[in-house]
Every structure is written in C-alpha cells, then in structure tokens.
View (cartoon, rainbow, N blue to C red):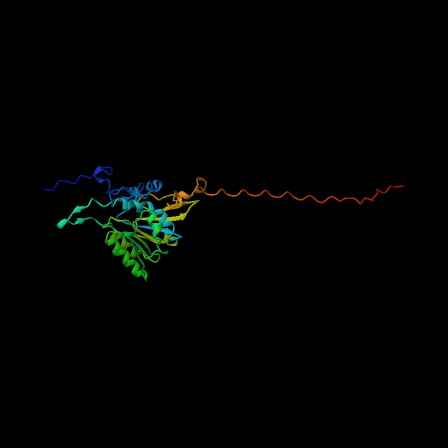
Length: 272
C-alpha cells in the first residue's frame, strides 16, 4: 500500500532551488556566470548571467555597448577554462584540452582583434560568422548553442517563435548565449528569461534596466562603470567623471534710457 503523500511547506530546504516566489529573485540551481559588476549581479537571478538560457540585450547602439557590458564576464569565462596540466597520451604524446570557442554571428562592425585581445579573449578561440540572410544567422546561432560554445549573435529580425527555439536548445548548454537586438523590440514577447536594455550613461558609465527576469519587476536604472580596458590607464580621475553642466550666463541688465546731454550754448530761458 502506497504511503500517504505529505505536503511540504513552501520553505522546506528540499524545495530550495526548485521553487521561487514571484516577489523574490529566483534561486534556481542552474549555473551562472558572474557579470563583473557587483551592482548588476545583485539584481540578476542566481547572481550572474544564466548559462542554461539565452539572454537578450536590447540597445540602440549595436556593436559598442554590449562589448563593454560583457567583457568582464567573457574574460572570466575563459579564465575558468584554464587548460589542465598536460598528460601523456598513447605512445607518449601529450594530450591537452581545447578551449571552447566564442562565435560572433553577424556583428554590425568588423571585429577588432587587438581590441578583443585587450579584453582578455584569446584570438584562437574567436570565430566570426558572417551570414548572408537572417535565416542563415539564426541557423548558425542554433548550431553553436547545440555545440555548447559561447555565442554572441546579432539577430535584429528574429521572431518570438525563433527565440523560443534558441531558448529550448540553450537548456542543455552550459555556455553563455547572448542575443543582441534593437531597443525598439522591447514590447515584443520573448521566451528569453532575461532581457536587459543597455544605454550609454553619464561619462563612461552604462545605464542598464532589467526589462524581464525571474523575480519582481526591476525599477529604475543601474549605473555601471564600464571604462574600456585600453582607455582606463589614459584617463585621469577628473576625466572618468562626467563633465559638469555649464553654468547659465547671467541675464543682461535692462538698458537704461540714454541721458540727453544739453548743448554747450544752451541757456535756460528767463521769464520776464
């Protein structure tokens, strides 16, 4: 005889990681990747970028802001893939593990290799895929996610059902997958569990708003300091901050009417 089912309280420790309330951030057991920004990690479910999901970055300046936002995380991604010590293989040959690649699918600008190297990305792991059509770009993103490699895909014309297909494939991958799309699509539905709007902030900061996450709605904007690594040594403390707004010029005083100067020969008229 089957024993009766005993209901578990919602705060039971065995449910942690599988159950979350809508009023709090999700604490799912899925792995995450630290973003490199403490203020952002505090607002992301799990404390970082999800690795078994696609993340949408919506921006009005594609090809610029996403690199400054994602560079610390991608650098940490490769640091965590440090090659193990070489081990002798068959017939005395040395066997090493290869780093997983980072696929750049249809970036709006030609990737600048020295700049990416300055971000800590090994050039041997970078693969640039230039698709001729949106369908080819979508196919390349899907195959890359299935292959468990890191993906940065610029898919401005992706439809909701296509993003859902990428999300389903990402559930079996432990590599980061980011979809860059224009800010104007923020009103469209999306299966991506995490969506962010990225805009340029004051000075060298990035303004980030979490449009969708597993948890309560995010209010306001995060100001993240995101000075490019190659530029940081060249900036003084004063240049890291936004320039102060110019003081308004004082309004000119109203002009007084000109005083008449009497003629030198003028004499008052004496009345008789």
